[in-house]
Length: 126
Image 1: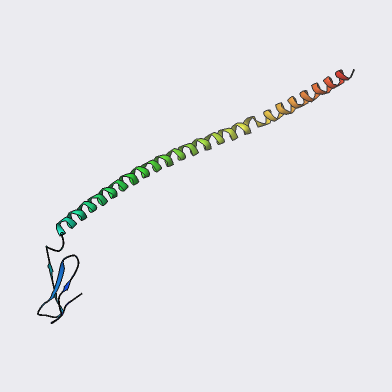
Image 2: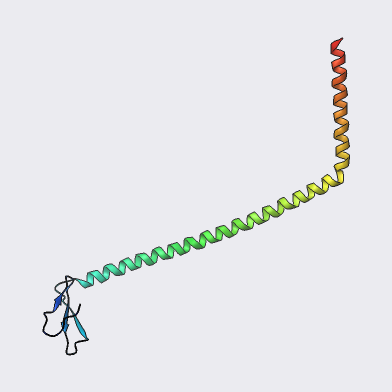
């Protein structure tokens, strides 16, 4: 707020006083040391800024730690995925190479089991 011409100066609670100057567009500001203890306020603000700076630094440190952890986790997952792909590729290759022999062996085993169960059922009825 500005005080112009013959108006009474404005006095704030914090001890700041405005008073008119020769030019009506300018305001002169005077700090009344009796009203407010600005040194204590400035000291309090400095300590709050210092605490906020420390918190910001801690957040930055934690963010870097989390970023490094995520990068390591991503590399581990990439390695695991490559290992799984290699094992699936080997398994498919093994199935293709030995698949025909395996199918024959499974069919023969099933026939032998069926024949043994058939014979056992015939023997148990007598």
